[in-house]
Image 1 (cartoon, helix red, strand yellow):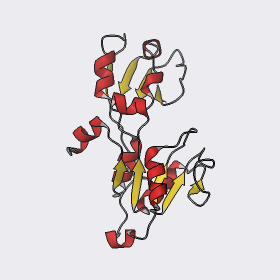
Image 2 (tube, helix red, strand yellow; image 1 turned 90 degrees about the vertical axis):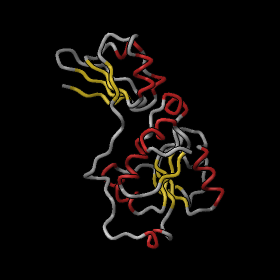
Image 3 (cartoon, helix red, strand yellow; image 1 turned 30 degrees about the horizontal axis):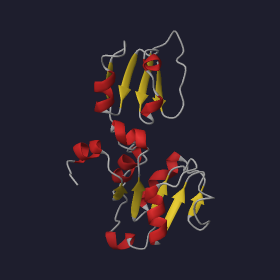
Image 4 (cartoon, helix red, strand yellow; image 1 turned 180 degrees about the horizontal axis):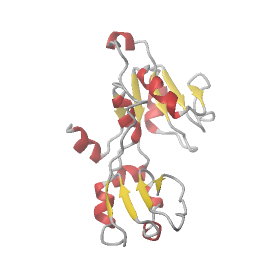
Length: 192
């Protein structure tokens, strides 16, 4: 059995095994033809499933984003007072564009730390802390953050796929400042 987590790049399923597709980001890149190459499809978006259910041959259902509780969990004995001096953190690649939540935090001078590729030309060197952070180190980074910043690529917002960054940061007990994604209201029960 093979589970493909569909992000930016398409994967060619191998014949002779059960092939599962889980669409967790960049849904505009996914086609009916691609979905039909799998035995079963899941999408982190009820809107996507409703739209594609009658267009594809394979069964398709909602499977929301999630987090790994072995990596992402709250810090023991941390208080909000301890966190006041900690950085505001964003983890993600720029892909050559200035992301509004990052730009606003940098301009506000809030002690921003950015981890991800493509930021060198867009942000001061003092803000860009690394080009890559390993997933097994991400929980520690989030637990040590005052706030975690998040945004959604436009197609994810339109298709209501909540960024995995939100699940990870909240599992670490950290507040998240994010742009709006309608599905996040349903999941959290909070309306803006």
